Image 1 (cartoon, helix red, strand yellow):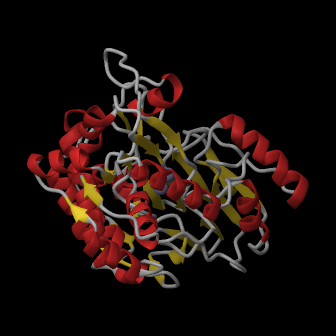
Image 2 (image 1 turned 180 degrees about the horizontal axis):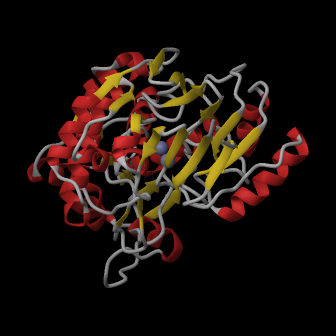
Length: 422
Ligand SMILES: [Zn+2]
Ligand SMILES: [Zn+2]
């Protein structure tokens, strides 16, 4: 019998997660996401025939994990699994993706609808059997509603961590994978070569900066991702009784959807309080008042590619009393990355005069935590690194070899890993 992993994306790159597990002549797809090139155009994963699929699993709602999934739903509709929160948020994310990048996409709203109506809700700890595959789902602690999945077949099993984090934040409790048994582990390696600073230290630095700026009547702009970081920042500000806080962009609807799915939040009452006390902006009048009056503005998009955060940046950048605090990874070619590297942000190369900070609120486990995850999984025979840059993966692989005695594989996109040969 043959069992293999086909790497359709995320081989030696961060993003574009797409991995097929093939058993005999059937398969299941673990994520089917996109990446973005230097011009910010979407890059699709490799093609896979949807009629061979018994099921698709979506680990979480970030576009680098779900962005290409509608492509699998044009002619037929394979079964699909995610948490209920991922399902509810995916419409928001995919419709926005169509709006921004529709021109480059080979699917339309019909395929998005077909995907979403195929999605069956699963919860952390539940099991599902589909054909000869069985899935078991675990909390991956990356963002609310995110999961890791173990896919078992009669010939062997694979644990796919997807994006994973072990630490507790204001909105998630961290991954729960201890004592899981897995023969092959496919693990993300975004930060396989570095540890993050302690979350509480980063939170403190963040709040100290905010207080300093507010005490001199400045405005703080915090560009955030709509799902995950946005709510975390809202919760941190609320927990420290900072006001006024304005919230704008897609992060607003994402927050409301999360509050309707409270079981995926670590502390729903804190986010609920933030929702009540912070001001959700709508319309230009509101926006003008917000940046003129001073306070903290939490707004998508996180890399300043679009959304109201770009508008606010234009309005507040030239006053040294103001501050821009970046709290997310800034992709190559994005305005956020340009700000960090050159201190400029507009097409004309205008310099920012406001205070600029970049703080590490990562939702991906760092090296030590990734190693801890691997150490706590039982009976591992094979480790496959995905979702990481090659240089990082090589360093991480060396560490794993030293500590666990297993030489990890670092497949490129397009590679096939034979687990059992026919
Ligand atoms: Zn990812
Ligand atoms: Zn993610």
